[in-house]
Image (cartoon, rainbow, N blue to C red):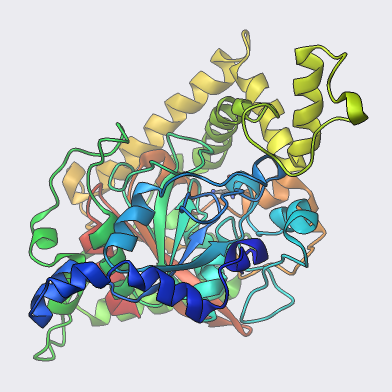
Length: 486
Ligand code: GLN
């Protein structure tokens, strides 16, 4: 799950890394007398953290799974990493991901970087080594699932935290867009990208969110909202603990209204039987906890996937224009110029050659598509229409929620139509087939809502997750539901 270069990078064994990182906290601790003071100052003292390789952490490279960034060593931490380190977390390594977060299997970075990092950098699903961990944050999900670290950071643009969490049997939280700073993330599609949390339990994700949530002057899209009351009172973590009812309340979710999204539960073969079974079991469990579970319809659901892919590739083509072979150091010098380097060539030829050799097939495909969707004459037909569809998806989801005048506190869907794919699955070589697997998660990113994937049983020996979606900034509600479904 970890990039070999990142874990080793001359920093010795895991024990050495932990000791070195922990030493930084000695001075903080020395000034504090009571245990309570220490707990407040370092709420995650010594908790091991894996960081997806498209998030900057000082002391490690940030390759985003791409040759284009194979030598990029960021000078400082992303805000999320800085927050977690200040809270006492120990960064034990960078985790593998699909190149620039584009993919659903974590298979695309390995071959790209194999020669650079040395050895076989592949991530497998800890439950079945012939399966993928999902993606694009597959390394983070697998690392938490196999207990290589307690918590891990990922990024979720269209499901890259929730889908691998589902495939690997862990909890994966995608916060509301704007709840958590994106500063220090290597951008894929900026209006959709959100940093997310992986943990073994909802409570672990809640404790992590407590530390990373909040406005950041370095990210103008981070929400200026103050933390909601439960945060200031000890946070989401406390919310999970409180509602679990120490007195043994039998109906801790009494009256909570859950909407089962009809369009995600089609019994026509598009969703695996085992996945439908897990959603049924989760609805039953929620009824038992006191929830009112009702079917709701989202007619615009089928617009999500095309609207997402048009938006994502458009933004990607713009964001990835910076990888021109000039700005970031890369291990492999682009071009075949030999000693003369790029000497006699025009700047355009140099850039074209660099991009062709430094970027993998999937980023190149998306740059080409995105250039097309934004070009004059097609922009109105494709990009603008996708934005209209995006608005419809968002308004419709909001209209189902109590916050938007509807009836539901949360929505429930499968996290993915299937369990983990086989490694090297031939069908997924067709990009359109791979994109179809994102159908359950992308609408949430278009809308900017928070959602969590929580393990909900097994199907043929593989974990299945269900997705709980909340109204904007209602992370507390979905974590609470996830906590009770565990
Ligand atoms: N699989 C989706 C994509 O390739 C989602 C990726 C993500 O969330 N980073 O776009």
